[in-house]
Image (cartoon, rainbow, N blue to C red):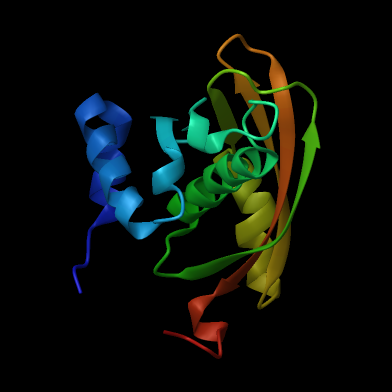
Length: 171
């Protein structure tokens, strides 16, 4: 099994397009479901991530818009990826408990899902509650816009976060 230092790849991806390309290639292997749909990280910062789902035939629904499930996957990927980079996958287990989507506009162009969290938000909503509880649930809001800035959808992912040392079925 090959172990990759993703912190190094993430830091490089924030600074260069080539670094972002390498990160997306690695994520394509680690998350094979996203690969055929072309879901990738388009932009990455310290407090935000933008994922992209392309307007291409394999992502179409019956009326040639991007399928609702593809949009939900882009939203899930955005929030899950940023939370894991903030938490550290070696310390915490992150499992999506549920997802809710609100669709506002038909997706007939590439769509970007953006999720943002600040260090203050993480401290108030994640790290402080985890000091008092073995498991917490958080709700994340992800905004999805197309290339013309039409608000296509809003996603709400609900995540369960637990320290690995409290997990009974560890790998």
